[in-house]
Image 1 (cartoon, rainbow, N blue to C red):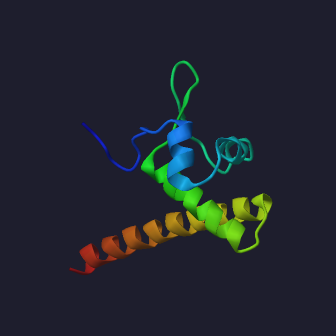
Image 2 (image 1 turned 90 degrees about the horizontal axis):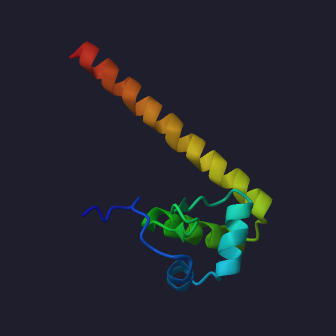
Length: 100
């Protein structure tokens, strides 16, 4: 059984309890594009550990004074930074193989 970071296991009430963010706010985050929980065939939201971590990051940014639009920008920039770092790592590995 896969219980990894991306496995959508938690319903919205459990996600709300685990993160301390009420269910309505989780729905708002989804509506604003900040969060994308898995949907079952019947439309029920299911949250993964990764989703819960993202909610924690959103909460942290809210505590720092950012609004939801600002948070969307920060999250997009963080994702782009991760993508670019992965590309740098891939290119460095390729260069090492050629030099080796």
